[in-house]
Image (cartoon, rainbow, N blue to C red; front, side):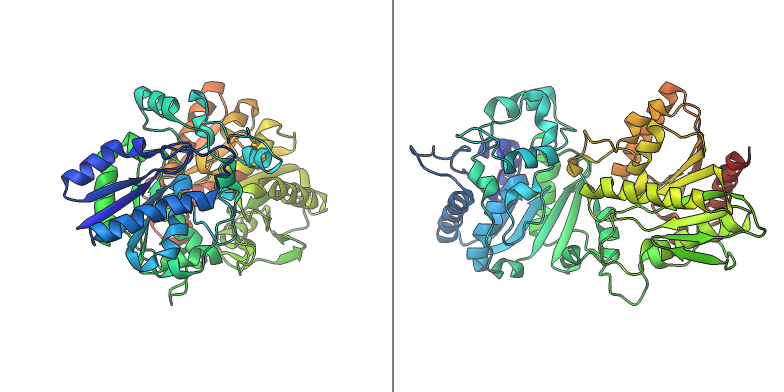
Length: 503
């Protein structure tokens, strides 16, 4: 028999699992919900400090009682904050746990507090500086749950119930570092990704391909993944689907990621889909210039990669085939092309990445071979949020802004929804700036949603947007296998950008 132990996240308690637990039980599983002190479990005593260790002890008590009573295979499920006490307990009872399920949660590490996983960056800063009430962090108001994750899929009644039953989160549970011996690393793992709240499997695979060390463990064959097309509270928005996924996870099924160190190069390092000849290239600092024939001055296209890209990734993006391919093609068509390395290594790095890009643009404009009044900026993928500054206040010399398969609004799990890097909001101030948007028809759902949101906002304000569709294209299609459709889209996009540069 499979025995599920379900650990709820911040502010919530066993009640959130009611419908999911009922469905699991109906399927023949044994289900226990861990009642954490102050969150549906016992009330803290006068003067008692409730911290992460308190909640780990709560989960251990359930594990120990189950191990004695049933002897079944224990699957420990941690949602949101709940993965921290779940992992802490599993580390001390590793031989008793058959599998750990990370339900729309992060990857806690030894020595790191749960606060690091709080999506709202401003809230993290407030708590670090001593925010919150003595009794704990007050639960969100009904309209503020999105600070903790996407509420997509929640009915009005579910949101009302979530708000009414929420309890203050003891501050010590968020501030005390998690301590792991390493024993838990031997336990098989399943990740359930809620794609309306954060990345899906394809995006996680991209991060593995980029070589991020902290992500490489996810390609272990003992690690499986599932997706749910919902927000951060699937036990409330789609309990039947969640119960089905948990049953599949318990059986060891699910998607397995491909390791990055295989003989085949990762997708981002495969050849560009067009056969473009080499061009003269000059490297200065973080910027490479690809030069056309003739003395100039020539219009210029500044190509900006996406991310986040691990700081230690080699080669760096300006040497990736997609960007060298576009740069050579643009230079062969008579414009200067510039590729830029910037410091977008985490979702919190957009500010310094924007500084890097702005400095590179000025460096390009200052080159005597460049017509400083005819510049296009071309952003890719996770570089999309960097367009916001340029959309909000386009300078006269910016003749075109292009984006390929971009992220155009922060994903809820980034915790930067109120930051300046929000192109959907910025496009209303773009005026007559021409925009070329290359849209992949097989885009990841979470990214495609931001593109559609952007196009809706652009239509509302009358922005000048030309969409170049690649119906069968995927994210990063330029190196994922050449097709006539994709080649045509690349040529059309380059022609559209250059036409606006020379108009």
